[in-house]
Amino acid sequence: MAKMTMAQALVKFLDNQYVSFDGKETKFVDGIFTIFGHGIVCGLGQALDENRGSLKVYQGKNEQGMAHVATSFAKQNNRRKIIACSSSIGPGAANMITAAATATVNHVPLLLFPADAFASRQPDPVLQQFEQVNSLATTTNDAYKAVTRYWDRVVRPEQLMSAMINAMRVLTDTAETGAVAICLPQDAEGESYDYPDEFFEKRVHKITRTAPVYEELEDALKVIAKAKKPLVICGGGVRYSEAGDALESFCEQFNIPFAETQSGKSACRSSSEYNLGGLGVTGNSAGNDIAKEADVIIGVGTRFSDFTTASKSLFKSDAKVVTINTSRFDAYKLNAVKIVADAKAGLEALALLLADAGYKSAYTDEYKNAKAKWDKEMERLAAYRYGADFEPLIAARDERTIPEFAEKFGTITQVSALSLIREKIADDAIVVAASGSLPGDLQRMWTTDSKYSYNMEYGYSCMGYEIAGALGSKLAEPDKEVYAMVGDGGYLMLHSELVTSVQEKKKINVLLFDNAGFGCINNLEMSNGIGNLATEFRFRDDNGELLGDLVPIDFAKSASGYGVKTYTARTLEELEAALEDSKKQTVSTLIDIKALPKTMTDGYGAWWHVGIASTSSKPEVNKAYENKEENRKKARKY
Image (tube, rainbow, N blue to C red; front, top):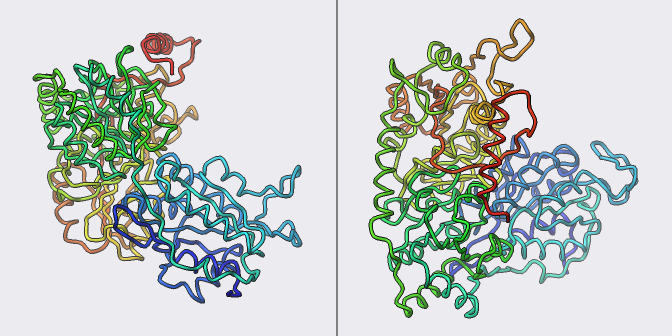
């Protein structure tokens, strides 16, 4: 037995957790991110100061930001390593709730230790305690219950043992993983208990491949064997299963094209002749054109978000769906014939049955022609420039913004900038993004044969993930260049961990696309009959409306104060020069790219269901509603 405080026992336990996958053993917990406050510093802080073992302590600058770093770190390590996060009571704890939701939606392990009110209640209300009048047992941390996979509150030191074993159970479960919140009352952190030595012994958590059962494989075989034009969807589960090679072999063996979700991108090679690229609302014409004609959809490791399925309108109404997924919940979606299994194990087992049946698809040149058509569109986008014959890629009802922006800020088109960036940065560079129009452009235009180099958070599309996520990827793979792709709106939302990258001497590169506001949502509102309302960064005009001149912001000047090497690019030539010089730097860099509004990609045949007013005095709104209703009739009901 070892007498120690609950916090000391927690630190010792974390330092002895390992995972094993395909026979490879790795240490699971790299360290702890924290912003110390009175709720955590004297308990967990004391334990980390006295004996942290091999755990690293990272200093965050914003609780949400540091938890995003940890989420990205886990994702870049394919969920085999984590950084835990601890916060003080109240607002510090509340700040991590957004990150908890982000991790849970994306099936990424995130271990959180929010400090809590006193278990004894003696000093109630302690500083920053949230008091709920209908139950003194309720605190800020109860809000985590809605966004975590496992939640616990350790009010007695001996409860730590069952709490942490269950936390590890969830964090290492391929189907159920997500955020875990273990709430730590600040007095309980310092209370002592005689913990049994076995609690601190090295634990190796086996992450196993769920094997498919024959009955489900047989059901899937019956469906696919009749398919003339099937389509495979490569989801995030392919990445975490490290099943990219198996998926490519499957598609080659049976002459089946595949398309990628945001989470699945970079699990397979972009150069594969069977890879159509992105699918759905942010997909390209190749993936969407083939998807519309497919008679069987084979979803591998995907949760079928509305962007992937175009709000369930992309696939033919009579198309059958087969799923391979470790999550039974996701496997059941779209009324699918399910195989509850690991992506790699499921594909390999299914391939044996299809081969025995002598199966081949009936495709000839259809998917090759679709890829060739998209290649021409990529060339057009790369050559897209601002000039006398300029036409916006997004229909612009407000004809004022583009000439005003071009005159005052710059003339770089967003799509040509991305094409140039792809050409100039390293082939194995990691790109990170999350929100705005950039995820659509990247899913369509970004190509890579480097495994797991595309870190897109699009399950929650959380503004503020981008720069923190870049730092998490850099901590996971310090030898690679990492680029955060972020809009000016996302940058203003949260960029605190840029300072942490400087502090840790972990160079990240921020490619900041400044289009003077929330350009993606500006497109959405105006295309649905709504006016230019509070989506561009403008001063108030003489009528008190936010329709005055555009607000000029020098992001490069601001970031330079953090010790970041900065650049401003108003032309493609300036962007190219900045990209080349940034490669020579050893400190984090930021390129302030003045990106002309309405120059991002758009459409390619996928509908997105958004709530549109059914009654309006504006004809444009009524027309948008009618269009929505027509598309809704074509979409699957569930």
